[in-house]
Image: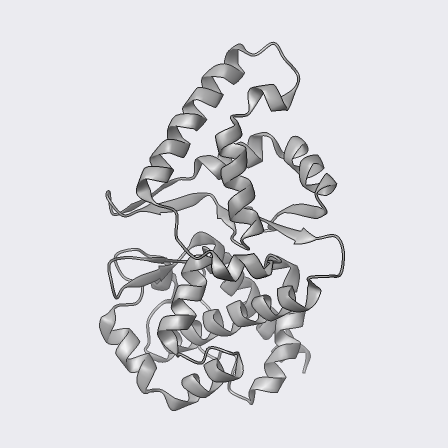
Length: 260
């Protein structure tokens, strides 16, 4: 992330933030269904390995493929994994965090979506969704073509924006470069979380955004939706998707400041 002005949103009351959020292109946050809030288990390492194996098989098959039918080329297991993540309200980013290796690795689901974009775009269109590659190029998500889930999608977008902006403000006030927030070996540690929990202003804003249990609930919300990764029990860092989203929010805020 590029360096930003230390002046961040939330210097005013929360209602003023809603305008900033709408200016920051709410479509950067995926729609979700009620089921998405119930299904919160992160991708297991064994699943990631399985996806990688399936992806290798897909690449080998695709190199030798004579069929133009994508349903014959694409492994059903990978397509099903993509469907689960997207309909749970998660984003699918270029990279995923491998806890066993303690590093970011390429995400085979993203690679497959990118290589077979036309197929998946048409597939999800038939299912009532629009498949979107974020403007940053860092992640895919879906949004509903109908208006039925719009209120919930807007609420989840707002909640994501609130948490990311609060983290950005906290980091900026501590004098640290925001780029460190997206680094696995830096990010947020246990001491940072204790400091955040002592900030009554932040806790009031979280409660207004319906995070009644405070920072643990807010951070796990980001992890579930793949806008952050958990490193151990009490450490987090924001994902490439979260980083891109936060950058967009800050740019929207800075535009408003220049126009006012």
